[in-house]
Image 1 (cartoon, one colour):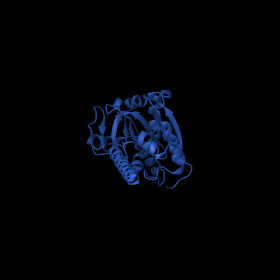
Image 2: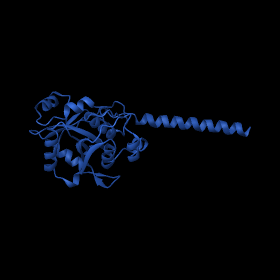
Image 3: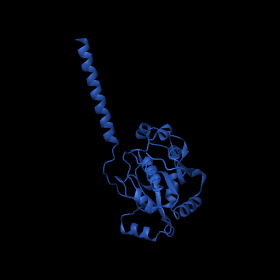
Image 4: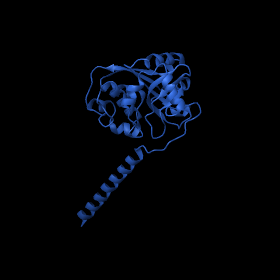
Amino acid sequence: MLKKILAIVGATIALLAVGFAGYVWWLLQPRPEPRPLPAGVISATTPDGRALLTGAEASADHPLLAGSFEPQSLKSFCGVASAAMVLSAMGSDITQDGFFTEDASRVRSRLRVTLGGMTLTDLAELLRAHGARVSIHHADAFTVAQFRDVVSRNLSRPDDFLLVNYQREVLGQNRVGHISPLAAYDRDTDLVLVMDTASHHYPHSWVPLEKLHAAMATTDSSTGETRGYLEVTGLDDVPQP
């Protein structure tokens, strides 16, 4: 009788654990919840947004990124989606599903990223685990003018990419740290195109470069360091999933 009771209790606990895990997983799934863009931010899908892209002097990265774009598959996967997109644009076959290779998992596991996201430094190391050449730049180490020069130079060439880590709240969006690639820059308006991986909330958007710098110059509470950007300049090898 005791063994039967224990078996029933064990089975019940197992079912509850599976149900709870399923519920947590459901909570982590992005669901379409479009949110309004704040003043000064322009959707790339509007006539004004399309005109900005047509006239942008620095847009060499846009075709490659658009061709490899993946919205984040989990709410915490903005960094994973951004990294997979850039790796794909450089010739790798890595996707979000296959991103956590043995080397990448040694940096930060799928479970840790799923539950807690990643920092700018984590993102750099995860990209390096896939053979990428990456430099990391925290926002307290460069000025708006220096960032503008980097953006203008980088986005004028198709062979390197920029990933930004910023606090959405500074842009007038919800309060959360976020990661996405930059795809184009319009010098006349000083607007930069953020290819937002959270497409369940926001479209790809043109944002004021100075405001984006301010959003990067916020402190990541998990590290005590400012956010910033990564410059990815190529692959030493092209790892396969």
